[in-house]
Image 1 (cartoon, rainbow, N blue to C red):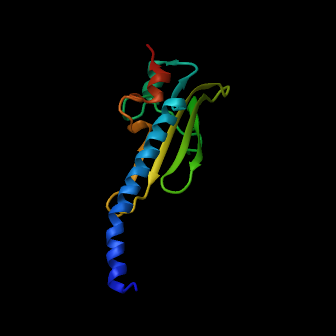
Image 2 (image 1 turned 90 degrees about the vertical axis):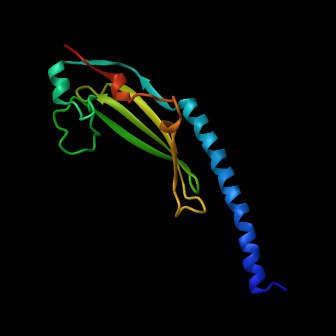
Image 3 (image 1 turned 180 degrees about the vertical axis):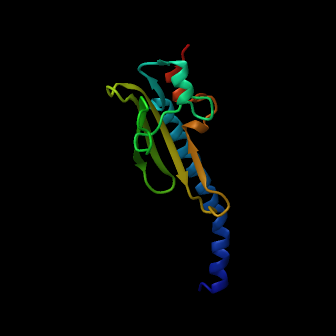
Length: 157
């Protein structure tokens, strides 16, 4: 017969097995995410733009990169370039995986300049109170070393 102390002992003995299972599952999905990143993640550049120096400096973000606002941001009137963003849930549960696509375009004619695709994985492991787990294409060493804005826009004379 299972007594209360035996049930507690079984639960304590099973805990390390579940922690190992959780870790192996995260590693499996991490490898799958990396494969998705290498398959179609990253930047696709259709057209580069040389922005006149004065306009570049006027619209420059604080990091020294030409700042492009999200098309849903307020106070972006008069900015010649914007981007739209879409998110798609690839996998629910733990870990959850989403695909984020940002499309950069010229406002005057809607011409698409480039697209950036990123996959993001988030998990709440068994011991999530210790640390939550987040991993994306950006975390892969050497996968993508610059922002799409650096690839799309350069400062003119």
